[in-house]
Length: 347
Ligand code: NAI
Ligand code: MG
Image (cartoon, rainbow, N blue to C red; front, side):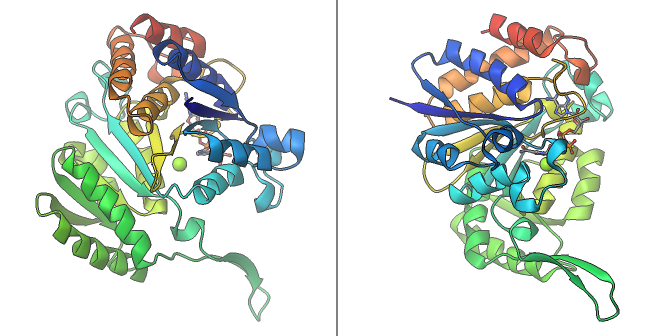
């Protein structure tokens, strides 16, 4: 039995996850699905954003399909109880240190991109984002200076093993693509980045067939808009990868189109859209389900060894888009459900 943990979360999470599941049930009816509470939805019922039962389900499952968490109703809670802690906790507990975030422009989506059509058409890249280190997990806190000024701090920290293992994923990914890896850092200013760069260069010796280059993150942000076609595979830290992938999404049309895989040392992975819970449109049936549907495809490919089924889903999304199916974020008026139906029709 192959078990999929479905953790829908809050905000638009349940809306988009339900549609991805419909697609999955057509393409992979033999899988077993079990739902778990996470984020604001879990806090409401259990008083914790990541209940033990959910973590146990995630540990038991072969793969996890995740929606989104981030209900603003809980913004005032201490950090450990906020919905976002659920996704950070899952990544950390399951050792999911490598986040693959592909960004490409689907044919016909030039009009939705923030870039000129001829530039938008060139985007086809993968961001390999480190997911369990950096300022997200470093020591953090609040303090007072001797003069009584309030201070906040978050430690940016990587050890060489953490950098080496994500570098291996970066090189391995580049090898399956166009053979070019760009490591993005801020080595002109940050010691963490200097170590990052040293280790990436050391790991590169194992991949003589991959062409390695380095770029500072500020320049990378600029180049992503100026000429995204220059990028193949980008490997970078947790914070830089978070920011650059949201930026890449607008080059590719919408944040509602970008899927991701969070992987560890084993085959297990957590698959989720790169977007959050979108409280501004939650409950309105307007969210684009494609990012989650495409995340389900990544799940079939990376955790379940079902690349053909993943191809089928991706082709169905591409067909729906090329035939003009558009939710509001893409300039159209289809509901979440209607968009999924267009994808189902293309299967
Ligand atoms: P967001 O990604 O939720 O929304 C940003 C903008 O994109 C909003 O205008 C939203 O309406 C739009 N958008 C997002 N997904 C969409 C979709 N599928 N279709 C159409 N439009 C879409 O980011 P935001 O507003 O910064 O964060 C909202 C909450 O989500 C916060 O609490 C944040 O912490 C959380 N969050 C959770 C993540 C996760 O669960 N992995 C990731 C990112 C943010
Ligand atoms: Mg983000």
